[in-house]
Image (cartoon, rainbow, N blue to C red; front, side, top):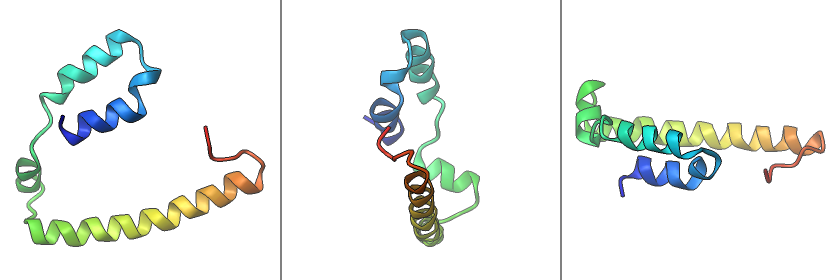
Length: 79
């Protein structure tokens, strides 16, 4: 299973009716491969890894902040 399909199955599939699941399944065929995507955005593997690390580092900070906000308002983070 490709990563995008696995992510969809884990996160969203349980919340969608069959017609949406079918549409997502069909749309997965139009997703580019990793190498195609890198070519489309004019990146090479090495430069993409630098950008990915920056994204992961930033998203960790944002996720921590959002968790703190939800927790401080008594909303919890286990939906």
